[in-house]
Image (cartoon, rainbow, N blue to C red):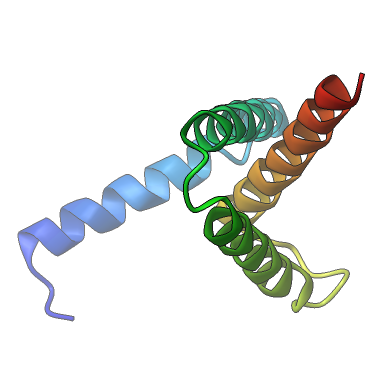
Length: 110
């Protein structure tokens, strides 16, 4: 890319954010927020899909496909390699989403 002012500004913002999230406590807080947002998404999607009762099979297939795609991206890398923050956030979002669906299933079963 060309070395323009907007490109330099975006590079400076990206490097300062990367430096900001190197702190382990900030990184952990971002991951916890990602988990809780995934939990919220799972609850919201299951509630909306249960209320509408239209295209349930297609929504479920899309969600399984999305979850498996995230698994493929996250676990295809080396086991001991340092993963970027966005990839860890995506994985914790997936874990929160899956956990939420299990909790919803247990609520419906009881």
